[in-house]
Length: 230
Length: 224
Image (tube, rainbow over all chains, first blue to last red; front, side, top):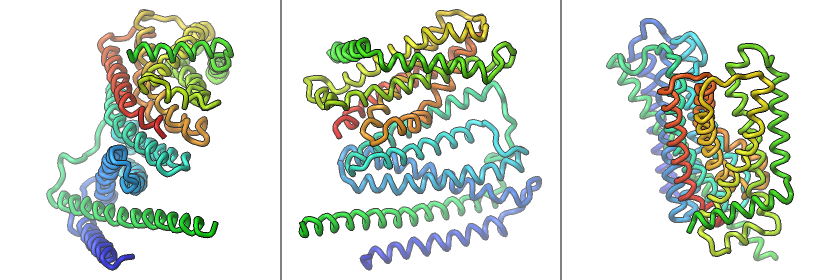
């Protein structure tokens, strides 16, 4: 790795590490205990932190997809790939942490509530994004098709949310406490956690991009060698 | 101009289908088999079965529709027909609209046969208006065809497109499935017209969005 890049990676790694420690402090010591749910409520901070960043990651996929189709520059494709991978990881975490909170707040692991259901569909859409990538071998073709699917998938999310919202309208679900009545100290911890996970996203992104770029470089070295030996 | 070209593409596909009858026969047999499988899986005479009836109908339509979509572009791959279409003096999007038209036609035919069979086998009595039912089914089918045709073109580039298509299509189809099943249920039981309108609106918006977005992006799917 070039020394300058290495420093940037190091700086982001350290910031992520410090923010994570601070957010753990904020979650477990600084913020007050929730009256009804007690310790279980603590997972809420992590849940919102990853959920927010999953949305960010998919937005980056959309932007990268549009930019790739416009410029045909493979660096946008690698950005979309890296961001999509982290987005799927974070969405998986959302789907894991959500039910843990829901079991305690709503007394059920899963309800077919709009936000939950949309998140599940979102997860499927971006798994499909990777299926598209996996099914096509040629680099530029893979980049184009996955970019097209990245755009289609993102366009679909608002309609999915709206239709599921309408679907569940006739069966009202009683909501647990969320967002609205948050204690200010809880809010501080929440904001800290969101920032920590945003930096984790940046850190993972750097690494993923670096790996992809190295892979690309290796490929070109290999093909150059092959040409020389033939 | 574009509609005329799309019409020609549609006509060509129809003629091909008329000569081989390969796709439509397998779609039809599949749809009828789904009806029978559902009759085995759920007691046809029970009241509970009436409640899931719209869902069964749409599962049959969508699954047999996927069979048709799989053929829409893969058949063009033989003898480099797709290359011929791309090189022909056509607007590229007319290929897309022609194929959408073909899918809607094939599915419409299947629905025309399978739906009465569903009614007969499950002894189902329609309480709402048939005209509204046709409208709902048309809008649902159109939504399925617009997204399905586009993703079929996308999947045709892949090595195992038959495997890929259902997996990438269903997450995108979620709004159509929900809206079609709900709207069909309301029409069949003669439910509230106001509730029905909101579902029809969802279908309309979906159809519109997924006709415009593929129209803009179709060029990229073909060019590779």
